[in-house]
Image 1 (cartoon, rainbow over the protein chains, first blue to last red):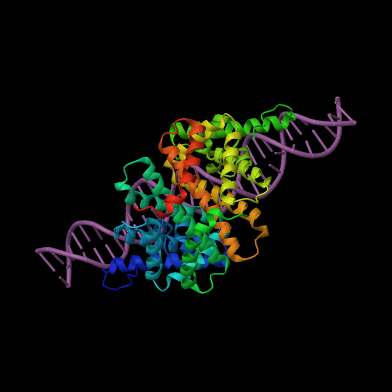
Image 2: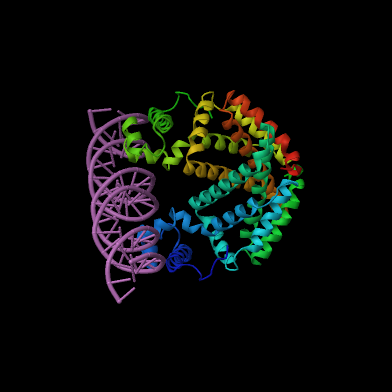
Length: 206
Length: 206
DNA sequence: CCACCAAGTGGCACTAGCTGTCAAAGCGCA
DNA sequence: TGCGCTTTGACAGCTAGTGCCACTTGGTGG
């Protein structure tokens, strides 16, 4: 995750620097001027690269705005792929999320926070962000259901992963609603609390 | 929902006919030729309206493809708004979904089925569809949480609604994976089964 | 040190989704 | 029939995103 190191070929270093400059500047411009009001031409002018180069680094305008999201989920997926996955699944997934959150780059907090605030107000970003989750969900289900024999098994596993995502959504939404105070530690605490709240949520009344 | 009637002013009738022709033709063209391969110009040529008129009826290309989704959720939201919501929330939401599904237009099955199949293969549609769900979620939470006093209450309600959505996703995905055989009845049965499966999903192992 | 190869970049032209504007056409009503 | 309001079409314009090709630059072997 934090491969900041300079023991890469010069070319790769340069490319990585461009990638980061794009994500960083995009987040700044989008926050300052608004997402829709900022064109990719603006961004490319600021970073001093061609639009063509932008699209070699990110698939879309939404993509660069949600780079922090993408970082989290790809790290999570990598980590989950290394696990045994033999105990209670929901608990395993929760612990894995905790571990991944704890292992993210120190700078990741700030980027993720800004990203959440942004996508809160831009429907296109929200939808795209949900798309990431969905993709991750699908990937997790795929790695997990290899041993599942029946459709019922597959459905239950799918449902478990979906509930995991539901808890994550709730926690991160609450975090954003609180102004993201306390940073990552608060987020991790909220995640834990939310998972603990699940049994209650099944039976609670309005 | 099924306001097919001809006791509307002539103008409204014409407009409604255009709306339906657009949605219907879009679904057909997208299915036959592929979503990306079909341009809005193609669609507008076929329906014989200007592109400007298209955008007066639908907000985007994704919008017209997901008209059936939109129909379901707006009907659901309308119905939920009429309820008391004093019993166990998750169960209430489930029953409301059952009622709404049962009350949809007879033709809705076919359109929804085609829509699901489409969005299965087009990431942009999937993301947009998730966006609808999210919007609906937000609306439900808003109507429900008016009486909630504490943040914990709000979080629990949010979580309940998110779990509702999780179950719906699982059920409809399974329905699509089965080729949507049996139509709406099968879908409704799957929804019921999925909700019954929730307690199991919390503790199951991989 | 130079020459060569491949990776990466920039510039250009082009498609397609989407919006603002305004004049023309069509419906509703007296 | 004629007036007013709503809806439509045509056009111009903006921005996201892609294909193409020439050019630069880092890596590598002679």
